[in-house]
Image 1 (tube, helix red, strand yellow):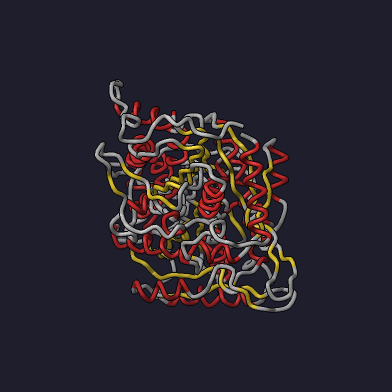
Image 2 (image 1 turned 90 degrees about the horizontal axis):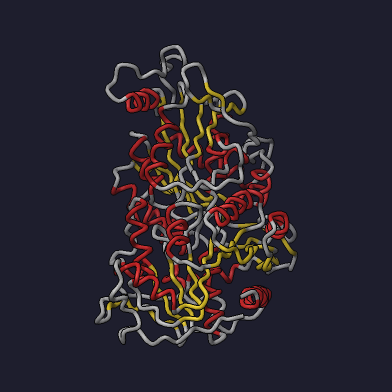
Amino acid sequence: MSVKSSKNGPCGTGGCGGQGTPDPQDGNIDNALSKISNKLIVMSGKGGVGKSSFSTNLAVALAGKGFSTGLLDVDLHGPSIAGMLGIKGLLDINENQQVIPKMVGDHLKVVSMQSLMTDPDQAVIWRGPAKTGVIRQFIGEVCWGDLDFLVVDSPPGTGDEPLSVAQTITGAKALIITTPQDVALADVRKSINFCRTVNLELLGLVENMGPFACPCCGETIELFKSRGGRITAETMGVTYLGTLPFDPQVVKTCDAGTPIAAGDHRGPFVAALDNVVQAIVGSL
Amino acid sequence: MSVKSSKNGPCGTGGCGGQGTPDPQDGNIDNALSKISNKLIVMSGKGGVGKSSFSTNLAVALAGKGFSTGLLDVDLHGPSIAGMLGIKGLLDINENQQVIPKMVGDHLKVVSMQSLMTDPDQAVIWRGPAKTGVIRQFIGEVCWGDLDFLVVDSPPGTGDEPLSVAQTITGAKALIITTPQDVALADVRKSINFCRTVNLELLGLVENMGPFACPCCGETIELFKSRGGRITAETMGVTYLGTLPFDPQVVKTCDAGTPIAAGDHRGPFVAALDNVVQAIVGSL
């Protein structure tokens, strides 16, 4: 494992400049990426499987272990991560005209499209090429500095944004999130093939919204069926990283801006998340 | 209400030709749309709120009432509707080189990207302009014929596909589907503003994955919180069309290719769906 960053120096002191290269933005992107030890792209074939809440809880958990962590929300049409972390206000710019991420605690830096929009309810109606430009800016023109991990919350599907993310963030590794039901798994197989087509290394698959225990009687209920993610991973030759149970507290804590991994919550979800995080860190 | 189609003649007998217009595809699209009384675009700001299963059950319910209904899946990256209806095999072409929709029962015609792909697990890695072309083909080069309703399952968000759909299907009206939790509602407000920006008439909002009754003890559980959709509709001045309860049978029946609205199912979900369908038909 090699998860610690290389400490090349802070932003604004020559560390994030990219001067002297033929294409300034290419140089800025290469420079930014060179200081990030591990780039994790969180993907899902289908929306609504809990990708953003998983990305947020993963980044919070990594930061909680003392890793210097970045969290980038590139879901341009439905950015939700700033809200899940209770981040308000617009992002600032430093003297080198770089975006300064929002700090959450001591170890987590966050950049979300939400934090660039003056009206959070405004729809972003952009076609593909404009979106590619924004994604490149999110890497090359943000003062990320030295990071052990950059967690990138990619929009669902296999379209412009995931393609641009895969092409921009060289050396990244993908995590695929799914729910257990068949209709999600069909899209997961597409995501796995997408990674293989664009030569994006696939770290493994996480099954979300698994078994649910009724808070009244304790009965275990399969809201979205069961074991489909694990079976798909095995069938497709992909590492299975674990199953997270369904817990309405995950929904409520994200809505409240205080993700479940950030507080003193205990219980089956947090325990399962910790196992998944350890599996991810152990595989690097 | 004016929901019955105009019966301009079947495809292949001069009804779907579009000859004599400067741009053949524009003419084909206009011709196809002129024979469809009501075009409903089902949208969601966020993925995974049950948009495709709602679109499928809505189309099945309309066909079950005797309306001539089309169902078009334009979610190019995650098409799921063919699977939800148990449709297998590729689409055929008629002598006018038009795609022939798959028939489900007597009154439902279905076209899905899935039915055009020889390998259903292959990822569609297309950039925006290519996607726009496919969406135009799905209207102008499909032998839809006379329809009372065309239900269009649009991909989530406010990107290329919904924009192309809104621009291609003139005279369409939008239905927005959401779950009750805040993180979904932020995206719903974006979808409402998207409709207003592109002058797409908004028929109303449906709240999905509402209250869940534990099958063991009967306790009502709010999996994704409650009433958020209704409150958002009221706040934003949008018609609230009803709430559908969460029911694992909706997941299982869609996975099995026999949507819940198609069988002899009874219960709270089917009753609530019927109320929503009546509200939609009554508003036209």
